[in-house]
Image (cartoon, rainbow, N blue to C red; front, side, top):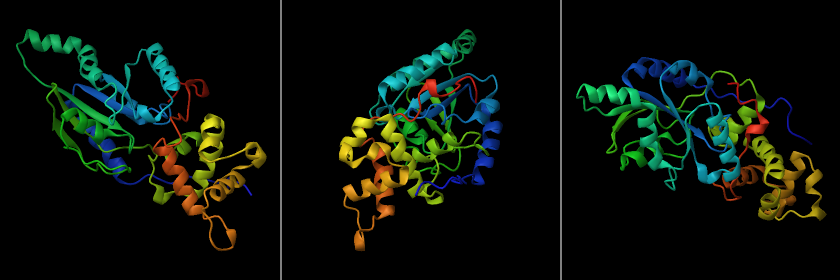
Length: 297
């Protein structure tokens, strides 16, 4: 038995259209746009509509959740952004990695405007709009930068539903926008990556099929860590199993059995997704630059 070939993601809630309008209306109020992406999926977590909306407004890209991603893959992504002339930093709002580099980089991007302000004797705070997909860590970022809990934080998408202005002590005033996705995924893998990292609510997903996809991805991306974590051996023949059988094997290995020895799929799926998202299995990036035409989207 395999994964349903008609696997689809239905996700676009009405508040996201409102968010796009809010972004358009408030761009004139800010000096720069700071776009957060997930370091595990820098390509998939780019909302192509954000680039269209901000136009020529200066932009800084932050790859958040660096502690969950493969460091070598993250370095490769930074090189790609540098080659394209896009300013990008690798950060982590939990560990604090890279946060000290943000303000100097913003000042560098706005050097001409800051000089004009200085020439006119203007002492203004830089205003930045914080944008990104749901659950990418925008509120955690703001709270870390502001030095206090000013934005609502939960590890699930859709928590920030209205714009919020937040002052900081480092010379930035931040406008937090709700997370926004886009109406249609042109690539199936993009939708899978967003679902696997939690950018799309689990309650609208078939999490069991999603966990089966995760099994096959981890088997390829982190074979040693995957096998060690779930006690998979050559004798199991797991390297040649289809997604369903591999998922079942892991459920049995963990002892997630119901009456009659039937694997509890819901419990197995929740465990697999939770351990990936928390990096319990290790630092895993779901996509590398060589896997995508990074000139698009």
